[in-house]
Image 1 (cartoon, helix red, strand yellow):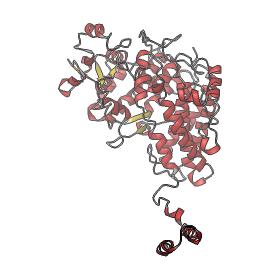
Image 2 (cartoon, rainbow, N blue to C red):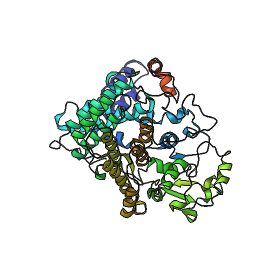
Image 3 (spheres, rainbow, N blue to C red):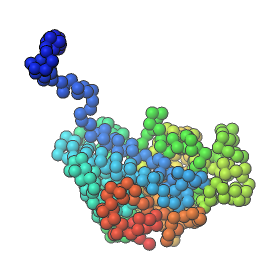
Length: 517
């Protein structure tokens, strides 16, 4: 056809029948043209199992975790200012504060909404459907714990229903929905039905997913301990009856490798390797109690006077040598504190060991058996469930120490050291809540959003405020929430303003619903 058309056109007069024939020929040749321009290897649909995996791996804590949550609870600190200035100076850095919003709301919730729409009415994929419900509830819980009121009912429905500017739900209603979803989704998992083989958390192990769901239900229930203890007790009982995590084998972990590195490890092994340090409060607590976990966590490059001198030949990992960096200073005002500790420079403070726990291939923990045991210890102390608080408390400590072996043999805590510590630090009458939640703080190290949420809920550990003079805090000694993003304030202004009018000013020190004084 192409050669015939070329011959006719070359002999035709300009205009007239030649032009008509040309158009006819082109029209005839158009048959099948659309099909020819379709990429034969392009994806036309995405398996919802892979979408769930995307939402899971997105959850690994990263840069925002270092800049806000772990710093607010005084586990990590950077004394350096600049684009990353955030909780180190109690400042509202919207670019960094948007991290959880961008990850969980703009990415995870969209993926999970699509998974749920694709699997809801497909009996063969009921386990995938309920797994996605559990992870969506987890994602919403982290979002609302971070910002307070958030879109829930209409969230993630722009593509599905054309809702581009969703209304904000109250945090109370969001938590009511989260509790209901976790309860129903966990109960709905069925080991006799099809396995989700591509699952990156548990390789489709339905009993483990069920225990994860009920452990998250326990976590969500305990958030209400101050604001609604009756409802908290009700859902604690549901979680325990359903069956929570039974051992470290149930831990929700994201595994990393050379192709998919740990986000925290990427920061600490990249251009910011010399920026972040272990906070004084965290190191002092571990040191004063002779906690063997300090040897698994910390390294100090003794005598370093610059980042370039933080080399292995200077590395000292013995607990007695560790010195945490104080909050309340920047790199220009910290010199007096450095001198008081007889250090060579600020680069001489202890750091998270970036060759082990802070490594590129270190696992990211999200929900653990240790955390679950400590929550059960508090619930038992409050008489919301059965069990011996002291035993649950000791087991929470023991299993977190055992968990550290996952970072490598040099991070493993010897059994004898674990036993010595547990025996020397029993649960003491009158200090139960403080001890349980202080150990939860340690067990949640590097899981910044959870450490911060539990600190606000329980008021433990007892920490001295960060007194940096450039603070954006108005009424509170600690950051209570992160602010809504500038993008959301511009694009969804009416709904955001309604949330602010209910909740309070869009400030770092506005308390969220369950964070009752």
